[in-house]
Length: 218
Figure 1 (cartoon, rainbow, N blue to C red):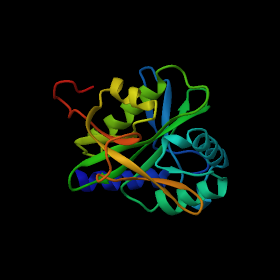
Figure 2: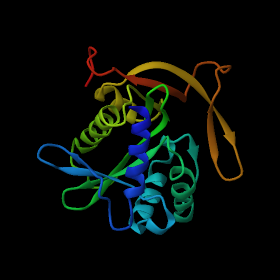
Figure 3: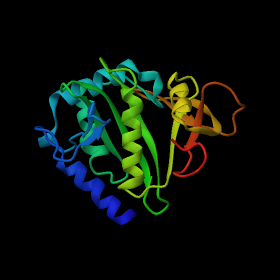
C-alpha cells in the first residue's frame, strides 16, 4: 500500500489548480465542507489561498516552531519550493459548503517505509462552524490510513499552544516532551529541540493517535 499511497498523494497534489481540484475529500454526512488540496505549482496558485495562508500564519505565529513575519511572496515560495516537490507532505484548505475557506490542515513527515505521518499545519481560520476543524482532521487522518496506507499517526505541538487541548480531546496521547531552545536568526526566531536543557516551557509535545482498532482510537 505505501508505494501506491505515495502515487496517490502525488496525484492529488498535481490535481490542484487555480480552478479547484478534481480530487477533494468530503467532510461530514451530509457533506458540510471539503478538503481541497492546495495548488503548489506556480501556474496553479490561487491568490486567495496565498492571502489567507499568509494572514492566518501571522495570526497564529506563536503556534509554529519558526516565528517570522509572513508575506505573500514568502508563502508562494514555501508552497512551490517546499511543499510542492516534497512527496512526504500535503496541505488542504477547508472549504465550507458555501465556498468560504475557513481553515487548513495538512500531513507532513510521511515515512512511507514505516507507514507513519504527522498532522501538520492545523489552523482554524475565520467563520468556521463549531466542530468543523475536528471533522476536517478526522477526514484527513481517515484518508491517510485508508487510502495512503499509513498506520502510525502523530502530531507535535508547542506546550504553550492552546491547540494542545484540542489534540487531547481529539484522541491524541502524549508520548514525550522535549525542551525547546530559541535560536535567533536574521529574519526569524527558530525553536529547536534540545534534550540537554532542563525541563521547562516552552517544550515540544510529541503525541500519537491510537492505531485503528485499538482501545481509545477515534
